[in-house]
Image: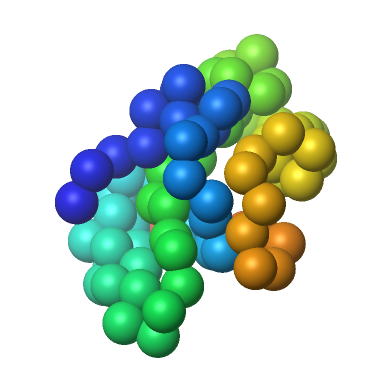
Length: 95
């Protein structure tokens, strides 16, 4: 599976029904979910959450970058059959 680049988060060429943001540690599970959703006919993009933080939150961890990414997607991404959804996972706390 290809990883969504920063450019793909700014101006993707294909419509997206589902956006999955994930930490690299959870990438294999996110790809499994993406394949399942694709088998149901959805167009799915999987992106590293750090790319969203870098592009939309000046590299800072937090919900602001996610909100900005989704607002940008709703305004600028090619129209999908339904608005893009977002799901993300963070790594477990290191003790």
